[in-house]
Amino acid sequence: MTVQALTHPQTSDMTLDAYRGFVARTAAAYPCLGFEVLDAPALPPRFALLRHDIDMSPQQALETARIEADLGVRATYTVLLTGEFYSPFEAGTRALLQEIRALGHDIGLHFDAAYHQINDDTQMDDALIWEADILSRLLVDDAGPAKIKMFSFHNTTPFTMSCRASHYAGLRNAYAGILQDACEYTSDSNGYWIHRTWDAILAAGHDRLQVLTHPEWWHATDAEPAEKLCQIMDQRIRDCWDGYQALLRRGNRINRTGLPLNIDKIEAILAGEEAARLPSLWLAGYHGIAAAGLLRSLNQAGIPLEETDHAILSGNQGNIASLQAAFVAGLEALAEQGAQS
Image 1 (cartoon, rainbow, N blue to C red):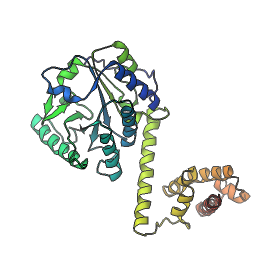
Image 2 (image 1 turned 135 degrees about the vertical axis):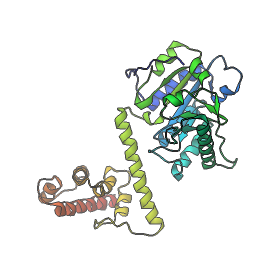
Image 3 (image 1 turned 180 degrees about the vertical axis):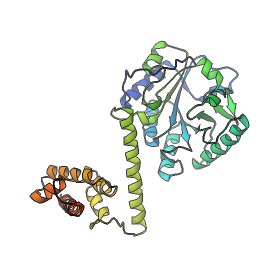
Image 4 (image 1 turned 180 degrees about the horizontal axis):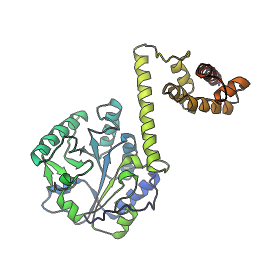
């Protein structure tokens, strides 16, 4: 693995269309294998390893997995049990990971040694066995628990980079010394290419490649990494809100918001529209943003406003009580029009 510790300037977009092109070109030039290459006495003479460390977004991981499956390409997806952006224990996340597995991809463990405060091989073996067993049981299907056969390190440290054995705790090591020495490597860590671009590594024509991508950086349209991250976090907020609403509906409970309206009904009527998000924005304390969004939605819908209400929603007069009253009235007007259309 010959690398230079440099950040490569962005020269190609990170969109799903671009991803399809990169995978197609890679598959045309190399057999795309999994980490079973570490089980043989010697590495195959030519191959590419397509690895995905799911740090933030199982949703985007499924998008890239579908592209690969459509192209007949097998990749490896590693799952982080100890991260802060998603939980494999959530039913929705488990379903996404199961679908990735059903597409024929390998599932591995994304392992954070620092989380366990590991500083020797014995501690690492114990933690790897524990986490791999959990992940295996989480992804059980009709055929039984998933077979977790490999791992990659999350946020590598000098200690983890010194772990060059091909296997630990019976699991294949994505950072095995033989792969570091024999494979050309690149990564899109933090939303930009580290070491070199995928284009550049393909153009060089090396015999063995390991390409690490993180699905959260690959979207339908391109944006800066921070924008993509914020979109992922925003989606998680919406998923949590929708889950809470569904929980209340199942229990025939009332969603007590302090707003004199039926939020569940209004969101159902406005589903798919920007205005459907306005109640949760208001409840999160973003009163001015919610009011401005409502004003825009009312204008787009052609719903007339009294001059006073317009001034209140614009933030030009009134207090929080009058703003709330105007906000509720505007939402009800939008919902009434939506129910009639």
